[in-house]
Structures are given as structure tokens and as C-alpha cells.
Image 1 (cartoon, rainbow, N blue to C red):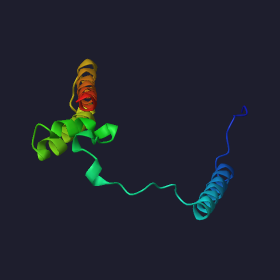
Image 2 (image 1 turned 180 degrees about the horizontal axis):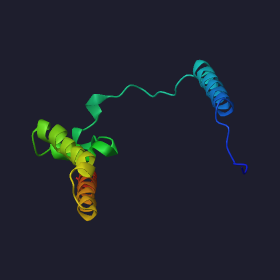
Image 3 (image 1 turned 120 degrees about the horizontal axis):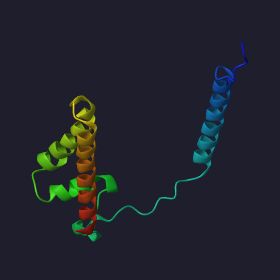
Amino acid sequence: MGETNKIKSFPDLVRKEGLALLVSTALLLACAAMFDAPLQAPADLSGIPSADVKAPWIFVGVQFLLKFSHPLVAGVMIPLTGLMVCALMPFLGLRATSRALLFFTVLVTSTFLTVLGYVR
């Protein structure tokens, strides 16, 4: 039979990756022990207006929805529905174009809410 090109992965590659893991962990622990974290002064909650506080970018759409509806609906039910629709798409028995349209709708809606949350 002809010679096949194979890459040895065990134990050679696993040993090399394990050694790299141990060395990088040791270096990280040594740096953490030698240097202090560059922390600033504690936050002053009295000087920050609540209108200027924004959530991380992935939650800005949910934060925008919380302005207009009940927290259970805006913070749990709507995002969970969007995630469940995306997760169940392969099992719904839809055609490929319908699945693409449904996914595109969820994607555009979440993007629209995120952008709208940053603008307002």
C-alpha cells in the first residue's frame, strides 16, 4: 500500500501542548505574584448620571427594551424566544429559504435594538 501522510497527535503533540500549558501557566502566575494590578480609585456612584450608563454591547438591546416593558418580558421572555427560535430552526421542518429568512429576521431585530439602544 502507498505511504499515507499522517500527523502524530498522541503522545507527541499532547505532550508538547501540555508542556506549553504548564509553561504559560507558570509565567502567568509569576507575573501575577510580582506585579500589582493597575486598579484605579473606587467608583463614585454619586457622580454618574443613570442616563449615561450603558450595558455591554451584547445587552444594549435588552437594556433598551427594559425602558418600555416589564423586566420579565424584556429581559427574559423576548431574548429567550429569539434564542429558542434559532436553536429550533433545524427541527421545524422549514425550507432553507424560510430558515434563512427567520434567522435573518432575528439577526436584524437584535442588531436594530442594539444600535437603537446606543443612539438613545
